[in-house]
Length: 167
Ligand code: URA
Image (cartoon, rainbow, N blue to C red; front, side, top):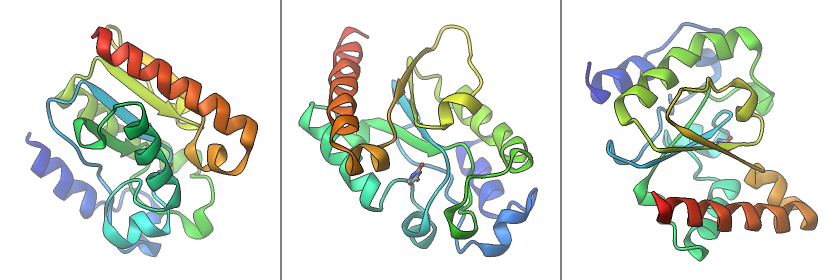
């Protein structure tokens, strides 16, 4: 199966209830040969509007911080565990996560990244696959809001930049 076909399935997905309140599925974006994959929890209102991941305030902050450490957003495959926005941006329910996870697993198997960056709560739900290095990072929306978190987030992104250079 090609990524295009997978994306079509995600746009038309009705495996859980979330599609009903969403404008667009948000499959994710980035090069198919990306060394690094970045995984968030679920798209918010801005992402739903555009059908693209991490394009709202948190996404802009993430993109800017990555760039400050020499990491280009365009080099990374960015996605979420759950591919549709949730009502009031609530945390996705476990049955929604379970319904959506096969998409993420297929994306990982297509891209075969060296490093997977797990943002915030996605760390708990992402399956670990042998041979891939997992790096857990504070979610950018928390890092934006709290100074202490922001400092830690920067350190984590600096460390990520080092690991990418070594790969
Ligand atoms: N937060 C996420 O976890 N994912 C997005 O796509 C946007 C914000």
